Image (cartoon, rainbow, N blue to C red; front, top):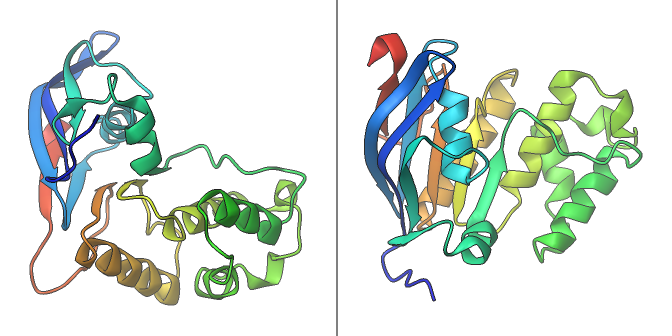
Length: 212
């Protein structure tokens, strides 16, 4: 049983290589409830790979990840239930429309789907709401996948470039939702080339690769 009286995600001595290149070595940090961590670095420095390690999709050469003080390998069910992951793969059903994909996700999250219309407008998806996702551009698919995270009940958000390809309205909306998530005791880790504005207090940051 996972004791989440102190909700946190911990990386402990993570080391991962890609071929002959060490992306990170003995990397350790902790993200507590009500916190956002930004992962910075140049292209190829390992930002996306780190998110995959934190989500349990990629295994490190050494070290481990803990959720609420327990290894995510030992508490897979509880960890997966707490996680919403926004990665490079959109995970959308190609034969469903944008609206149908989001309504389906809402039911999985135990939500009514009332948020869908607002998400479509805020993320500039209203004009393609009734299109099957197979016909969307890459940017539209990314925004649809991001909408699923924003409507989730997940405690932990892992986000890969969440504000890229968003207009100013969409960016403001995502940042507002992040503020609400953090203020409500959620955790978020975002790999990003761009600043994410939360409040007067700046998020914590770690740097990979040449910027380390």
